[in-house]
Image (cartoon, rainbow, N blue to C red; front, side, top):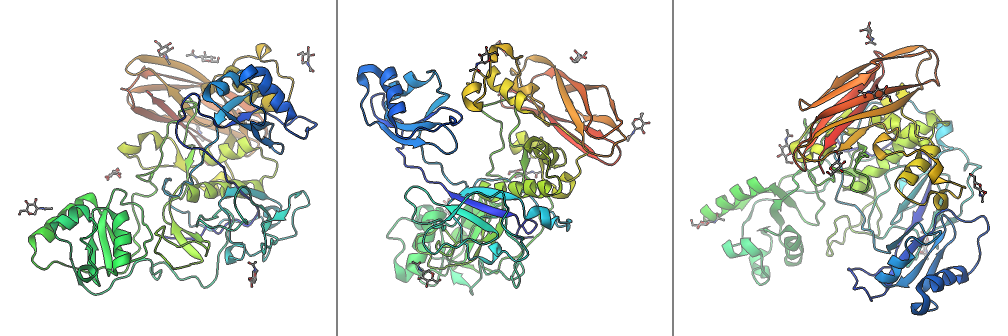
Length: 584
Ligand SMILES: *[C@@H]1O[C@H](CO)[C@@H](O)[C@H](O)[C@H]1NC(C)=O
Ligand SMILES: *[C@@H]1O[C@H](CO)[C@@H](O)[C@H](O)[C@H]1NC(C)=O
Ligand SMILES: *[C@@H]1O[C@H](CO)[C@@H](O)[C@H](O)[C@H]1NC(C)=O
Ligand SMILES: *[C@@H]1O[C@H](CO)[C@@H](O)[C@H](O)[C@H]1NC(C)=O
Ligand SMILES: *[C@@H]1O[C@H](CO)[C@@H](O)[C@H](O)[C@H]1NC(C)=O
Ligand SMILES: *[C@@H]1O[C@H](CO)[C@@H](O)[C@H](O)[C@H]1NC(C)=O
Ligand SMILES: *[C@@H]1O[C@H](CO)[C@@H](O)[C@H](O)[C@H]1NC(C)=O
């Protein structure tokens, strides 16, 4: 069940990102770093901060303090960082050329929050020549370039289009897979100190032990429970005198605290509760995590037994018949910034992912863990996102001319529907990625640059600054988020009110030239969905056809979701779009 993502070997670009930051919510006259985003880079980039200081002095008048600009962006976009009060930042918003102003803050790595997914096991065909020409950019905490996973055997030369550099610090050598690296901020090199993992471009590694043989947790012979009731409840310091715990299994309500205590005191193992029983964690000592129900039964055994005993056995791999399922800890939407655009779009493997790991960091996140490994099992969005990046690169290697929106549509409409689970209802709509199916989606929903410009204008965002083009929003038709040609339909409605929408979508035939697709609808009992027309004929590939979907009914209670779907099929291809109605 644990498998390294082996399918993709494109070239990799690595960027280390590190933000300097002030945390906390400031009072109005506290100064902190604000990022002032001003859209596309001008054709001629001026050196120095004078231009930005001018802007600040004009807007802030007498309160302007020279030298407040602490950083200038001149590579990917136009903007700067300045030490401002909240009032000053608010004044800057809405100035000519200013798209947005927001506080600089530390972005946490998402290592324990993600989506569940089951790896497809089928062997897909490969396009090695095309893969060699695809570059994936990664912003992460770093990489271990010597890892066997990033060997460049079988790869062609570095793509000619590559204009970057290998500047990963002392001793950091690139090859034909890792073709570039940079580090930023306070980092000393592009090596990973934190033990994140790069799963998008790994490949199969010989001689790897098969699952089960992986000594993540192993058993020792029975040790005796040592915690008395008081200890069980709090695991307070003092209860853990070494002679009490030595070579015994510690039982702790607080697993985080218990791990350090058990490690320090030489315990044989640790047993504790977990609120996320669907995820495994690597610990520095033998460890069993019990669901809250099992833990409470276990506590009564402990309470009722004079000399309680436990035995931690080797981990076993079992197939979970409910997979793929959105993991209990995963974010499951909706999209709070744009309630009418579905998030998550898809799910991908993010739980118990085995891949290359940095030997600079311990395999568990416990301070006392002195082990160093080349491979590790982690869970989270950081594990899930690279799978989707990898699938996108894989699709691109077969269809180099497909735009990002076409590739995204191909991945979304071929994703397999998830098992439904009440606690993660919003994710019903999104399926889990199927790389093989995504290669031949049949029909795709394409979004053009013009669509994005109309959407920005409709949202009141400075489209001219972002695109660097002469955009005159007042002359463009409005485009609301729900009307963007997205591969899914999401309707945010007022709780318990009747609603009725008529949505238009356009599909592009990327499949066989002569094909006829019929619509089928699986509607939630509380929703009426109708499609017009119900049949789409294509006489050639590259043709576009437009249809409308009317969705009506009575909105659910606040926070509830009504999930339906529309499927276009020509008998072979299955093009599925979720239709989600919810009350924010
Ligand atoms: C560079 O790598 C070599 C070989 O792995 C090692 O012996 C040396 O100590 C490294 N130097 C630094 C500065 O890390
Ligand atoms: C242990 O047993 C005592 C008395 O039998 C009871 O009051 C207490 O709630 C029990 N504690 C647990 C954790 O089951
Ligand atoms: C749904 O999720 C809950 C909590 O995560 C779990 O207890 C339950 O068994 C799941 N139901 C199904 C049908 O998978
Ligand atoms: C932008 O376009 C408008 C017409 O749409 C034109 O009047 C104006 O001069 C243009 N501005 C620039 C800077 O090209
Ligand atoms: C929800 O209610 C508000 C206020 O009554 C109204 O302006 C808005 O159009 C309604 N939205 C929908 C989707 O019906
Ligand atoms: C929905 O919109 C389409 C395209 O504008 C139109 O042809 C159709 O009649 C509309 N349907 C309803 C039920 O309003
Ligand atoms: C589409 O519907 C028509 C009419 O009901 C039917 O004859 C045809 O077989 C259907 N095609 C597919 C691929 O389901």
